[in-house]
Length: 121
Length: 109
Image (tube, rainbow over all chains, first blue to last red; front, side):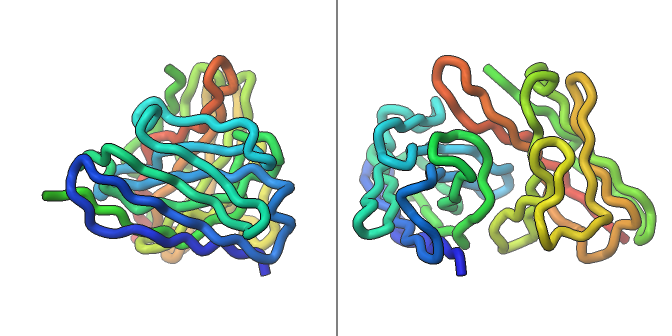
């Protein structure tokens, strides 16, 4: 079945880096744009980033631009989020999600279960 | 920047109709989408393109949009519908991005 499995979260000190991964199965990975979305404790969903089906175009929320980098490996059906210069306000559950189209952002129809990132000294 | 505004909370008794609104200046030109997120779970799409229901979503969930406001309606809300609901849309001007509303906590009791 169609599935996204996100991983790579953990506890990290402010200023450090972390890389999240999301492995896809059950669909033609290289046909869809993919997103990262996060939810901080006590807050709502926040859209983070999207990458087009071929990795050509990448877009970011203002809150992470210049610090986070989205990428994908279509040979291994894997999406990544490289997070540098982490701040306490980046603490959240991070979800990968599939766009319904190859060129995003449009909307997301399949979500991973999420991976938790905690930024704390 | 593009914003979507939702009420923080809505409360209904089981069997009543719950309405959750989402307002945004771009909604006359952009579709609204609705996600349900229950505690400890990933979001689930319940309405897309203003008023379409994905397969597997109960018929009691419906959506509408008029002018700058989109509305999610749950007709005959059930206890299991208690969740956070988020509207979503896109801003494709300049730097394309997704935009979520602040979320509405639906209480059914």
